[in-house]
Every structure is written in structure tokens, then in C-alpha cells.
Length: 112
Image 1 (spheres, rainbow, N blue to C red):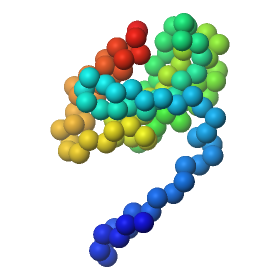
Image 2: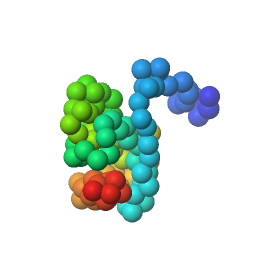
Image 3: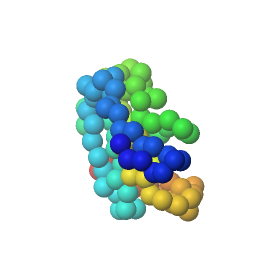
């Protein structure tokens, strides 16, 4: 635990067990960020890429990861700034064109 004066206290908690038991991975993108993802299904199957909204993370897609994995390679990404993905500082790093570049780079990094 770090104490930042009388204003902020940062506590580090262990991850909940519900996040275990999934196939986790990381992609180092050409955009300079590292994205965390969870994958289900066969690599040879068509890709279904699941992108969460605000303020969520990959776990939003847990039911789809299980439901569609027989027909698709389902990948749920923690977008930049969320979950276990990189968290660049500054609002300019979260503009729409930057996030779109991450999505394009993610598809490329997955070999699609």
C-alpha cells in the first residue's frame, strides 16, 4: 500500500478467482501499447473479436466466449486503459483514431 498524503491511498488487492480458468494472453501492438486478451475456441476458426464499452473489460464477454467457441475463435480484448492492458497517460492517447489504430493493430497481431 502506498500513501499519497492525506488525499489518496492505493491498495492492491488479489484478483478475484472468477477471472481464473481462462486462456489469457498479451499482444504488443505496433501502436506502442500492450493489450491483454482472453481467447476461446480453435485458432483455425473464424475470428469473433469482442470489444467492450465504457467502463468495462473483457469479462463483459464471458458468456459469449463460451457460447460461440465451437464455431469461432472468440477473443475479448481489454482496450487500452482497461483491465490488464497498458494505461497511457493523457487524454490524447484515448482519442477515437488512436483506439481504431489499436483495433487494426490487434487484428494484424493476431495474424488475421
